[in-house]
Image 1 (tube, rainbow, N blue to C red):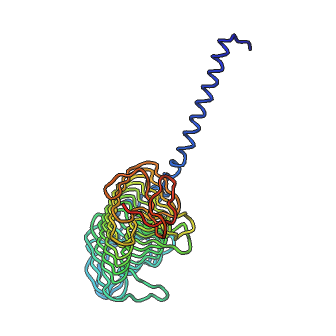
Image 2: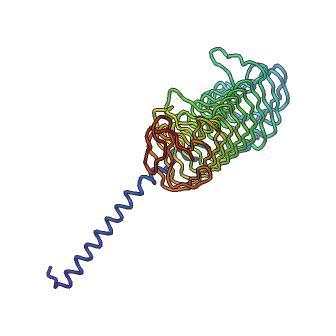
Image 3: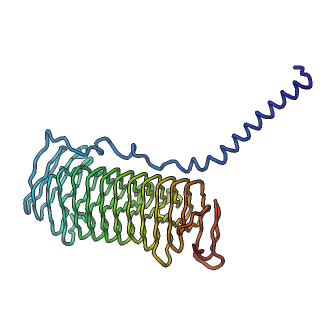
Length: 397
């Protein structure tokens, strides 16, 4: 190719501008990729709930009717829909179905009060549903007794996956736990008022809330999911609904992940939420805590201790003393949302902090970096994006 001087200038200028444009795009991608990767949800609702989970009424065409009576257990041994009515004491609905059987219990204004054993005991099935179609109540008033080698410690006690849904209310009172599941517990509808001396809702594998109204009063934890054998499990997912939790220990506790995608949560507890990885993608959250508001502790080897906030409206009010509003044994990532923290020590992290977006308000003042206030001798203060103030004394805001 042969160019005159003017053509050569235009040719090389075009080449240079093309190269410069590519470099600018590459720089933008490099600097925005970490924030985009951080905002990927751990779980999605589509993978956690089935169509039947979300159905709030049962198909009663072939349903079997049962009326509870004093001192008489009801035994269910096959798949189907079973409607329960009546009032009784010292009676248990026992589900002992086959491994492929799905059993749906419809509580239609039933009331059971037992002295020492679950009101509903699901021993075996593929999956169980409890659908509340009429206001019902279940209670255990004394010390739970074991079933052979099984420590039955919940008013509703299930050894299989359990879904609770419906259009009415269920009131549960317990001298130990309210609802216990050895696999997954899902709540997709209904109104639940649970008063338990220990945990309101406890599961081994997961607690998943899609919708419903929950008012939980617990001596220890409101929602508690813990699995010592599988480090990926033991998680809590909340995608909607309204939860009011008053707890003596943790409002929400998971050994692996706590993920909030939506809903309204009002928590009054020693600690608001505790898990190894806490991810908040939405919702309106209000926490009043005498210890930590959000606490990412090392409880599962499957995740790095992290608090990640991508969206939502979060208000945390701390008690006095050695308390932290947002406390991570690892890292804190804020990509969006609004976080208001009031207290002596508002943020505390052992790893790094990323502030990529959103609004942070500390004791009424909007800040442009994530503070870090840590125990120990030396200087106090705070660190900004990706920074760490070291093992200094607690700063104050």
